[in-house]
Length: 327
Length: 183
Image 1 (cartoon, chains in turn yellow, purple):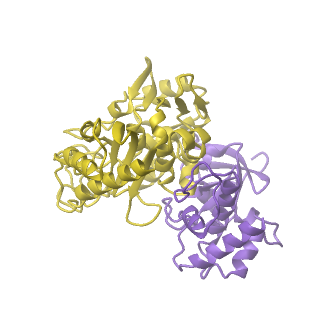
Image 2: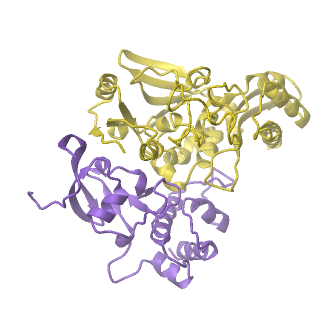
């Protein structure tokens, strides 16, 4: 591992200023991904700015009925928060479906959103990877790509985003609060992530040195009827092979509102707007849910080993929406 | 050096730090290369070899310790971040000549074969039982609004971060179940 300096910033402005002035610095949150990537030589910062001591660890109920969650709130604390459990079960479920008890105690809200893909070629410095080493190629495109993208990938990168939390937040139209050197900015989470395109090394729309300070969940009474379903290769402690975050609001059987997002299918959490449009205003049925998923997945381009992800994602869409409809 | 802090392998001043934190109730002060994990600090600088290095990537759980009372994987924590914090390792779960109820239950239920994962299992179970006492739900909790009942399925899900290559899982579940029932 490359030797690094360590800095505990006095405040958010200090953190952002130091990152802005140090091209090879990185923020350190819970460390569950970054420390591992430093051991693997995938990330090689020469300075760590530890943000866990900043006063960003509170969950605050907002006057409009929404919820602001500080960037350093740990995943386990957020999942256990009574308001999250009552008003946003999809969020609690996504958090609880991720990692292990120990890792949820460590992982932060902001860090979770900025974790890196678990594509094995990205994590192996001996393999070609445009995300890790731009221009080196993509060993995954014709390699073992069972776990990788079926939507919106490019010849340069077929990685998926690994976060469960981000999928739930995409369904909830979460806003990400960011501090940059020249001020603060609100970014809808669906605009935080980029498609891989020709530059998979650019994963977000954040400026260099930007620090996520909080996320803001808008009020969404319908989200009391919401859930997250994650399919993985073993019963627990594994990344998603497919996942769905769903909010469903029915009025006499007719879909008044629906929010749907997919995990493990693309370079970013995939908000299924086209499926939602297909569902909204129609009498709910499992058949309708299946047709909506078909519309969303029409543009899927499976790789050699992951064709199963298309019917899998369709099946879990039908299952989750049907369960919500009958709950 | 003043106060006789344990010496560590260091690079230069810029890449090393002096850290003081509590381990099993005693304040320890060390100068460390910033790259040193809590796990390596415990094992190689403080003589506490209870926490084990299995995968060193946060996947096996054998390095689990309690940090400010919460279970964490010590292989993914840089010790430089710990100034003023408090760590409890398997050596601190009970006095040197006694067993905690959890440790006694592991023996009574034969909850290990080789024992390599056991320190991590014990610290993890200790932290997990505190989480249950605080009413935290898990992925297999049906009703998020009610306190979870500690069924075997709940124990298995909550202990998923600790692997046992000897597959002593049924006995680990039994030991944890008994400890939870008698708390």
